[in-house]
Amino acid sequence: MSGGDSREGGGRVADGGPRSGSDEEGRMRITVRFGSDAPSAYDVLVGAGIVEELPTLLSGLLEVDRIAVISDSTVGPLHGERVAAGLRAARLRTDLFTFPAGEEQKTREWWSRLTDALLAEGFGRDGAVVAVGGGVVGDMAGFVAATYMRGIPVVQVPTSLVAMIDSAVGGKTGVDHPQGKNLIGAFHPPRLVLIDPVLIGTLPRPERSQGLAEALKHGAIRDREYLFALDSEADALLSGEVVAIERAVRRSVRIKADVVSRDERESGLRQILNFGHTLGHALEAATDYRLPHGSAVAVGMVLEARLGERLGITEAGAAELISTSLQRLELPTEMPVRVPPERVTHFLGADKKVRGGRPGFVLLGRLGEVHPGEGWVHRVAEKDVALLLSEAL
Ligand SMILES: NC(=O)c1ccc[n+]([C@@H]2O[C@H](COP(=O)([O-])OP(=O)(O)OC[C@H]3O[C@@H](n4cnc5c(N)ncnc54)[C@H](O)[C@@H]3O)[C@@H](O)[C@H]2O)c1
Ligand SMILES: [Zn+2]
Image (cartoon, rainbow, N blue to C red; front, top):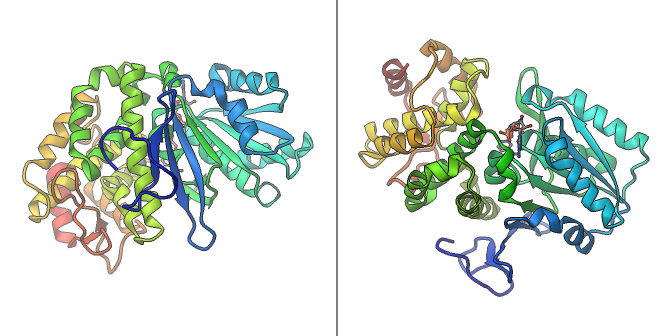
């Protein structure tokens, strides 16, 4: 599952990862498999300009009567309207629904309003949802599709780097609750994911940076060469150059698709995607979510790499290499705002990975590999975590 795109025959590749290859136009196609009782699969296609092919691809895949394009107030006018117009031009009955942009809107209220709007427009079981937007739109539209008449198909058209690299692949959908993020949701894998790197052109630079934090995580856990490539292409990536963005998206999607496909059999492998996230989530929560997720994960990765080095699990120098690359990607490597360590410890205790009072961390072995630990997680003594936090915050 590394190296350039290759043409491969049918079926799962021998090493158990998802099937991957590229077609005549040079687009990458990855087939993600899921479910052990009734195995199923969906394709992720990556290619510049591929969004134009949505009507053809969708007609070939699904027999649908109506299409609901769901987007947000920012992405709707930039891309959602064009996608809806393309579908209408192909004689597919399409309506566009938008909700206000922003994480604060990823609520049950908007889930309910969007569902009501689909019902009012007479959508039936033969309808489908096309999500055009960042991770918020993908999670919301996916959850609307998951619950509408017990589930209608969803196609993901991610428009932010976070969504392309992370949230559009994997099938997790849902909304937030005042008690925490993503507390209400469903597993509802998409029928197709179409990733068009050209759409990143309109994404603000700081949002590109946020997505690159997850890309760097993919390099750190699975492919050190990828991490170094992100570092050397930082300028092109931050300015949204299509070729550089496409290359990174391909590598990240391959890694995420590989991990989620294998998780079906190697229970728990998906855990490794939480590198930087045990501390990242606690730091995010400790700032009342003023620190954006990607920035929190960036700091989390540096601290978790340092923790691993201290415990003799992570290769010496890994934290420093991660730090240098993060800086090149315009991401923080230490907390930009002060938070009391006790507050971070409090949120660490609330983490779902806590067992026996000891939080679980995904720790690197060599840079580019996760140390197996116990089920990919290491239980770290409270005093070691307290020491790390007292020095870092
Ligand atoms: N389901 C999963 O597995 C998974 C994984 C990671 C993150 N997430 C979720 O994803 C969300 C974060 O995703 P995000 O960072 O994309 O947030 P987002 O959807 O809020 O997008 C960030 C901002 O960029 C704007 N935007 C998106 N694409 C644009 C474009 N092409 N041009 C201009 N503006 C654009 C959006 O309108 C928004 O204002 C969180 O809610 C998180 O929980 C889910
Ligand atoms: Zn994340």
